[in-house]
Image (cartoon, rainbow over all chains, first blue to last red; front, side, top):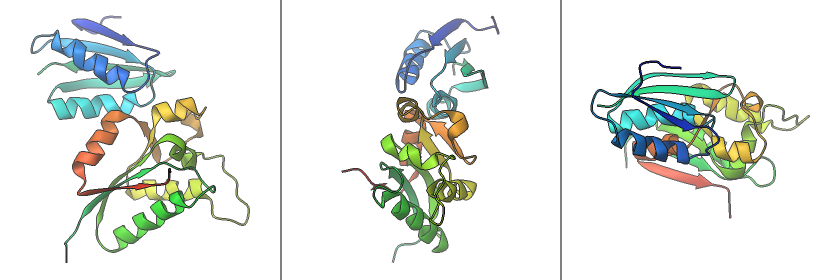
Length: 77
Length: 121
């Protein structure tokens, strides 16, 4: 399961805007350069997570969707 | 006279019941014709129904196709949670419409000079 992340946020079952709020909270716990992996199944997350990264200056390493599960890897600025 | 403006639309109503969807469509076409920029169209609450690609409307305008057409040149985003609460799945959406949420809505509003809301009430 590891992609080199420092923490994992399981946002499965959460509906918008919860995944983004939980993501913001989880990122506060990380240090600059550390990575967070996010799992979500809210269909809006595929669009929202990259937007959140752009707005906050964090680095979106990857985001994929497979079988309804969205997996994102984000590096804290 | 103002110069080129950046518009965004939030659509709250579904197809055919009222004319909010038609007005949003015609506003978008007119704004583009006049040289304005359409930043995006956000389909919220019952507005997500206008992107149901299974709509069949023999002899009448097909609103799903109209919004799919807009999606070629304008970003059209359907609220994912609204869609989920209405039983609309990704594979029911028109090809040129994406699902999004609060992040996409915030970004659109921030990028616009004016946001217009159609439908609802």
